[in-house]
Image (tube, one colour):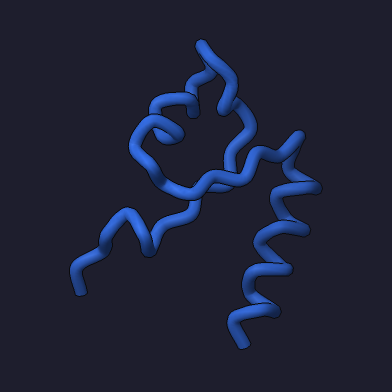
Length: 52
């Protein structure tokens, strides 16, 4: 199955200029910026619940 940018979502912590995740933002991929592992877990759990 071929994946396209529209099918992707990055959950990352450093979208700011100079951050290691900033290049992902430039690709056009949807990004959600989080503040740490706990917030990442909540976001992922919410996505999974919404998909079912």
